[in-house]
Image (cartoon, rainbow, N blue to C red; front, side, top):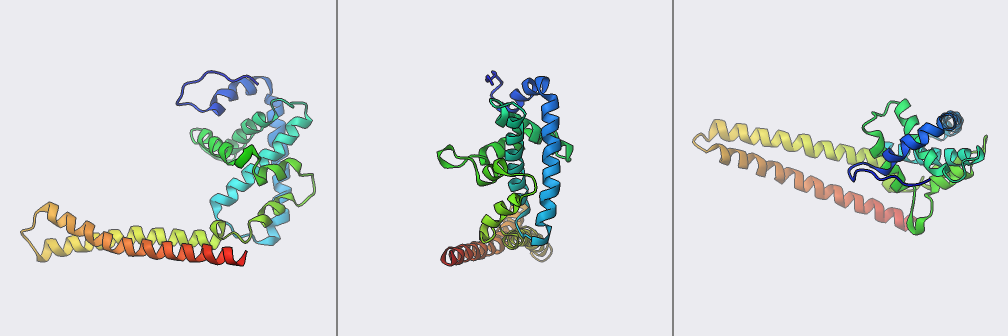
Length: 229
């Protein structure tokens, strides 16, 4: 499919959608329907496995897997030259149907486009397995099994990160307000800038150690994971 000239601020995906949608609406709809059918079956198969991954990683992996599924399905319908791009368009439509805001969809597709390729222009694992999948197989489980021992994408690690982020945010704000209140009430005569500076410095003295502890735990877990590997 030929490229179209677009405004630099607009993505390639946005430019190709009208062209594809105009000529292959039925094919795109068929891709979406097929992907949803496959996804329902695959999610049922992995339900008993109780995978514990970070939500963002899990969503991205499933979306890349469906990209591969729709890519192959589109080729089987005869769209050999445009199959991969049509799969991106179908995936965009599917995400919007599932509740993603239309304004966020192009950015999500561009992110998935980048993540769909690894070094040497090879397809990402989820895309490749999705492309090679067959109805009734355990291909989605095969993708997730590959990452099951990866600490960086584990749900436990994500929850630790999320808790640490909230501790830094709310803890820093609480200490800043507490110091500002104390200085204002018991040390009158200070300028507003001095009071604000005292609050910010106190918050930093709390946030920095918590951040360093988080980095230490992160490195320790990654090191332990590498040694185990």
